[in-house]
Image (cartoon, rainbow, N blue to C red):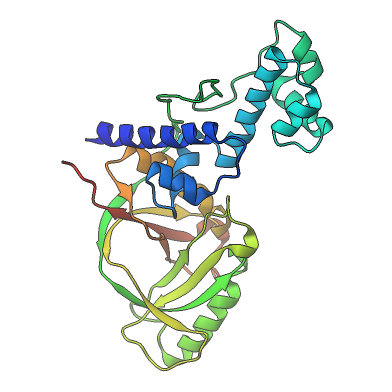
Length: 303
């Protein structure tokens, strides 16, 4: 079953790559691409970039340069027009980017019969003139050693404070939440410190990132307008542990989705992950912080 699941991920990712090639000159949204792959919009980019070893933006930029290399060889189109077609504002910017990839300026590449545009894709995906590929070799991190458990989680009622902006600046939300709950004696016992991160910082602008600082509670109570209440949904979750600074959490997310998930028998549900912080950042060195990451799963159709 695992092999069948892996092939499903590859097939759906191929659909996205072909859609990108067919619309290489258009502005494509992540929601639009997620729909092409039938992946959760919350998690699409992490799955995609993990399997290919490059982000959507990096893939588009590279495919445009590869197309430009073909145009340099097979047409008499001016370098400026090719540069504009590749999404660059000037031939100078294009030439700099092209040389960084090919080792030659576009003008010299056009004149050289021996020069080849190198394949710099970890998954060996290249621009194809017929705009269609049938498969690819997913990028595999051979050093991946991720321990993952599947857990059944019950509904959790939490009090929360919302934050919008860089994740590293969410401290004010925690100050407000803890400052309110501490005098009520609600921080001890079985209370869990939970973070809900809605957006991937690799693709969402820092000022638009959405986060909720949460603490589990037994019941709703009267409090300030800044604090809300919600339930974190019950269900099956894949859980892995991140040890280290919160600033490197995204690296673990990328491996979790792009490497482990795509090689597992599971698929992510269309809801955000959450994190449970197991020690106190105020009294713990950053490299010793322990965070459990909960990835929501949906049932696969094995029929």
